Each structure stands twice: as structure tokens, then as C-alpha cells.
Length: 219
Ligand code: C5P
Image (cartoon, rainbow, N blue to C red):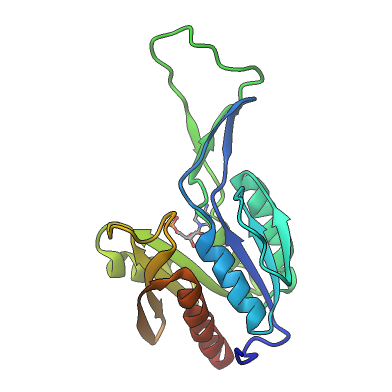
């Protein structure tokens, strides 16, 4: 049985993709499966935490013992997270949040009347950044999915978003990351780092929760 290293702590976790509406029948999204975030939620429950999972649209079973908040768009996920983190000890952002949303949501289905269609996008709120920069911010953990210069970009993100910890994964490696059951992570914090080699997302989630608990209890 797992040691109760997060006994009594409140942990908020985002997972899955967001969907950004274009018109009543269409949306823009991405390939995030939610598997990493759901595995982290399960590992946090096993470590004794009170877990709130803020999830984009995925079809995964909710781990036993987690409270679930279902959201669709980045703006909805942002609003739910800002509410949920008020009394949280730890925030872990695994969701693949759309960076932009269509500027206008058409009230009626967009018709194929023209040979070209131009869409304008506006920036979505950065949930991770907004939580990390709260005056009374929880211990905040971000993810960095990168296709090149993985460690350099992750270190930059750790500093610029004022994170406590970042978990970087190399999405150029075939069979790992998005939609896969397996992943590998390079976890970096101020003062140390650890490479978690390729394994199941459940094994990585347990290792990550151990690292988070260790650093959280030092902070
Ligand atoms: O800056 P970048 O999008 O690469 O950062 C990725 C990290 O930021 C992930 O932890 C992701 O969950 C989080 N994020 C977020 N809100 C956004 C964009 C990213 O919470 N709008």
C-alpha cells in the first residue's frame, strides 16, 4: 500500500483537452486523452489527498474517491479552477488547454458558400500562469510537452510562470505522450531535477506524486 504522503492535503488537477466552439455543430480541439491527468488523480487519492479533478471532455472512468468537475471550453475550465484552488494545497495542470479560441461563435451553422474560410482567434486565459501568480498560490506543478529543446524550454517555463515544479515530456518520441498509455518525464524544480524513465502513465503518476510530496513538504 502507498504511504499516505499527502494525507489531508487538497489537490486540484486539470486533465484532458478543451473544446473551443465555432458554431452550433463544430469545435477546435486536440488529441489529449486525459490519461496522464487521470492517473495522477488516482495516485494522489492513493497518497491520501482530497482530490478535485477538473476535466475537459474525455471518456475515461473517474478514479474512485475523486470529486469531478466537467468543463468544455478553456474559459469554463479557468473559472472552475480559480474557484477550486482557493483552499488547495497543490495544483497540477496536465490539461491540454487550447491556447486560442475562435473570436466569434457563429449563431448558425457556417455554410460552405465560399472557396476560402478565414477564422480569427483570440488568446485563452493561461490557467497555470493565473494560479501560480495568485497572492496565496498553492504548490503549482505544470507540464511542458515539447518537440525540441525539451529541458531548456521547461526551465524557461518554470521561471517565467513562477512554478514550483515542471514535468517535461518529449512529444517527438514515437509511442509516448499524447493518447499513449506510456510516457517519460523529466521533472524539474528550483534546486533539483529527476528523470522518470519510460513507463506506464500509472507508474509515472505515482513517481511524480512522490516527488511532489517530497518538495511540497520542504516548501
Ligand atoms: O505554455 P504551455 O502551454 O506550453 O504550458 C503548458 C502547461 O500550461 C500545462 O501544464 C498546461 O496544463 C498549462 N496551461 C494552462 N492553461 C493554458 C495553457 C496551458 O493551464 N491556457
